Every structure is written in structure tokens, then in C-alpha cells.
Amino acid sequence: MAPAAADREHQIAGDWYSVPDLSLRDHRFTVPLDYAAPSGPTITVFAREVVAVGKEEQQLPYILFLQGGPGFESPRPTEASGWLKRACEEYRVVFLDQRGTGLSTPLTVSSLLQIPSSAKLVEYLQYFRADNIVKDAEFIRTHLVPNSGTWMVLGQSFGGFCAVTYLSFAPEGLKSVLLTGGLPPIGKGCTADVVYKACFEQVVHQNEKYYKRFPQDVKVICDLVTYLAKAEGGGVPLPSGGILTPKGLQTLGLAGLGSSGGFERLHYMFEMVWDPELVPGTGKRISYYFLKAFESWLDFDTNPLYALLHESIFCQGAPSQWSAQKIRGKYESIFDPVGAAKEGRPVFFTGEMIFPWMFEEIHALEHFKEAAHLLAEKKDWPPLYDISRLNNNKVPVAAAVYYEDMYVNFKLAMETASEIAGIRLWVTNEYMHSGLRDSGCQVFEQLMGMLQGKKPWF
Image (cartoon, rainbow, N blue to C red; front, side, top):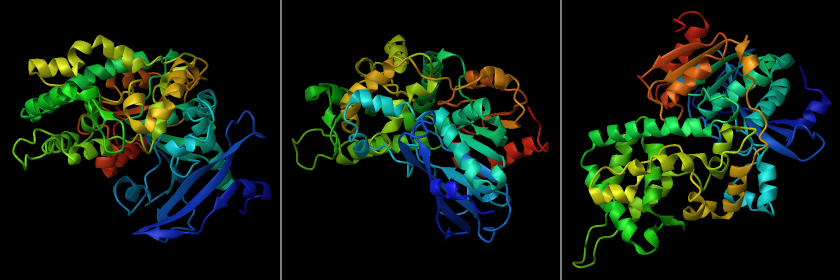
């Protein structure tokens, strides 16, 4: 069925092209920045449709994939592998670049500088949370799925948070939902304090596991922290600007402690922390290799939305007020890097947390310091979940809950699951938060089997 003329004005579909074993087609949709003001400013939202080669014209059900984040673009398929290969045997998969990411009117370090003031930037950014991501998804569904039919949603991490928002406010568009490490805290107000308290406890556990695996790193990292603390200005310059300080070093835990292979990659990074002394008397110096590697672990220069909006994903009608920083204060005796180095005990890394000093020490974020503080004090965040509607949910839902998930706390995830009627749970310690990426076919098969009655529900 050909789209109506009015629809064509809002949608541009490209031609099919291919990567090994897959055919892809790009779609660009013009949507309101604010759906409450449809005649106001618009943005572009990008989605990539993927099918197995030869199935371009077949009538297949749709799966919408929602990426983790906030503030990260969808994966770019290079071949048929993992869960995508399995899904394309029976489905069309739609990869959505959530608004502000990828090719969806990307909010980059440079593009954000076009907005003239911090207050205007905050006003703009309020439209880039899960509530509007879901509205974009519904707009795309009604334009892309034949006869505006329903589709399945697969939500990873923050993408799962968005899927629960979808269940709350637009369940009529959903055929079923799969969640992988993506059950959000759904209480009213700001749940960030509860989240970070639970997360700090899990991060302590992950640190203990890391140093048990690599005890030789205790001294290496203590020496590095001492070196940074004694440097002029309390740190050393980074290649792209900014400064590496002891507390900045701790942020390596964000990527290193919570995903498969992270411990190993972190350890090998510290193997090359010091330059060799080629000329006697030159003195100790951190290698350029290490400083560059440190920056490559952080995505704030390419995906600033993550830093700007991270705490707001937990806010409904209340401010976050730099929640991670508040909660860290209660654990300072454990997470004080300089104190740990002086005592020769392990320097603990932090986890998925954004701190106000990042907007001073990370060069790419310096321009957004004032906006970040305004966002932290913003009170009028609209609701993201409808607990009453979730209690009466009719959409089939299957969720993978990872027992040692550093990013989405197990206990909080189980509390949310108890509020979603009919949800099927798969609780496992076989995988970490990155299970869908690491063993996607197995995770996808397990959840699909639960929906189809082929696997136990609990």
C-alpha cells in the first residue's frame, strides 16, 4: 500500500543496499521536537530497516531495537551475526537512532554550541528523554508497518527503560516486548538516589573481583594515583585537552567493571601505563599510549547526551541534584583514591555515574557545565511510567535479568518486574549486562522461547 501524500512529506525511504547476508534500507522521518506543539520546530529521526537477503519484499513481522544509553546511536550492522542473524530469519528489524543520536538530528559537542545559552539548551534537551523516544517510535510504526500494525520491541539497557515507558503510554502499538538488562526503577519523584546507593554496593563487589583476578594491579594503580595527585594542578594533561586526575582515573570502571572482557582489557591497559626511561635521569612519565587509551574508553566527546541526560532518566517531577555525587559522599572512605594509595590498598573504580567535576576535567564537556547544573536542579520532569497501567499490562513481556548487573541493579529490577503484569523472567548469572552483545543468539532464543511457551516462564 502506497503511503498517502501527507505521509510522504514526513518520510523519506532510501533504496535497498547490502552487507554480507543482509539487505538494508534507510528511513528518515520528520517529527515534532515537542509533540505537544506539532506546528513548532521539527527534527529528523533516522531508522534503518534490516532483512535477510532475498526477503526484501516478503511480508514479515517487525522488531524495533532500542539501544542502550541514553545518548547512543543504534548499532551499524556489518554482517548477519548474533541475535540479528537469528531475528532476520523471521522478522524485519528496525534499528532506531534515538533522537539526538547517530543520524537523528545528532546533538554533538559542536552542534550543541549552536544553542545560544545554557537555559535555552536545557529547554531543548528536555525533549530527548524516553517519553519522546516512544512518541517517535509510534510515529515511525504508523508510517512504516503496513496498516499501522503492531511490532515487537527489543530493548537493551536504557532501551529497555524506553520499552517500559512504551508499555506505560502506548501499549496499543506493541505486539510483545523483550528486555535485556533493561528493567528501570519506576517509583515516583527521583529514584536516582536509590539507584546509586544500590549501584555503589555492586561496584564495590566488582572492584573486589577485579583485584582478586589481578592483584598485581594494586601497586600499579596506587603508584599512578600518587603520581597524578603530586602533579601540578592535581593531574596531567590529556591529548585532546582536559586533565586526568585521580578521581577521573576512577571512571575507567564505567566500561571496565561491568561488561564481558572488561577486567582483562582494563588490566592490559595498565600494563602500558609508564614510558620506558630511554635516557637515564629522565624520570617517570605516563605514556601517551595510556592517556590516549583512557580517552578512548570515554564517549563523552562523541556522545555528550549521555553525560548531560544520564541522571534525568531517573526523574519524574523531581530534580536529581547530582545524585551520584551525593551518594558517593557516603562511600568516600571506600572510594577516596588518594587515601587508598597512601595506605597501599586497592583504589576502587566508580561505575555508571556522572559527577559535576566531569564538566571541568573533560574538555569536550566544559562548555556545558552551566547547563548540566541547571539540568540537575530541574524539577518539572514529566512522568515516564504509569504503574497502574503496568499493573494491568496485557502485552506479552519477557525479560533477561542479570544477577550481577553493575548497571541495572538486580534487586531494583525485580521490584519493577513485580509491577508488570504477566512478565516472564529469566534470571541468570551466566551473562553480564552485555549479554545481548556477547551471546545474543542464545539470549534472543531464550526470551523468544519464553514468549512462545517453549521455555519455562520463571
